[in-house]
Image (cartoon, rainbow, N blue to C red):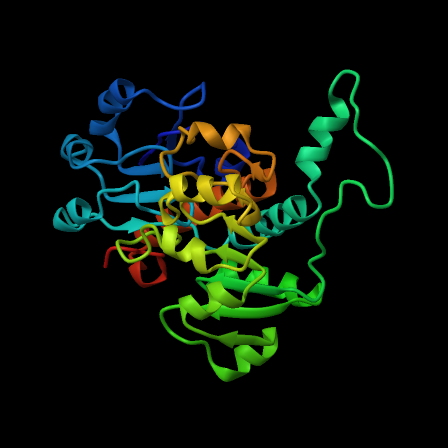
Length: 318
């Protein structure tokens, strides 16, 4: 079997697939033209979030048996086209849980304690930053309320960390959690509007759908608490970036921590100029440990397919 990767991934993650041919680029990723040449021989395509998998590509890949998306999201794949062609699309949801939760919490702490801003100021030539007990103050997370929009696996992992740090947790998701699970996290189910009004921190962990497009918009930002902090490690277009810039410029919000962007990889230019936003380049799952385990997850999906065990695959377009 030929396993074609759009992107260069850790080779040690594919040692268990030695009986198959694993084709990956030497540099970061194949160009669209290079990929089109390789697709006719591919039995499986492993795609990353930054690579669009189109109907045209599937048309070229006459032997394609499954698309394995490297990550929890799959909005880069034309799901309707894959379903129409009978090609299952899978993802790798389990290995991304803990690293993404860690990164969301890292952003919470970095914004709260102004880490990135103060680091930049300390490094400036002839820095005039002052040391003192009432200088450079941030805010504490202990005792504060965290609102989680999308209390799935990643949101729950964030809640576990927040509870350990003495935070109160509000959450919203499409289906309410069982009471026992709510009790485990000391979490309270509320509607989105209540969550926005009563949270000191709002962290997004919802999938990107038409319903969640701009779930944080001008209105949502206007009803959030003054000096609240917004964290987004979900998908960029869940936030109206222009409206967020205005809320940060006016200091309506204390700050924001962003790992994803509405027009990714392009950022709204004003974000670069704001000291009260911490920016990272879509690295929520970006640890070597996670990358290798995600490769193993891709391999498991392929092996389940070859064994006829479709019920064990993480198929997203059944």
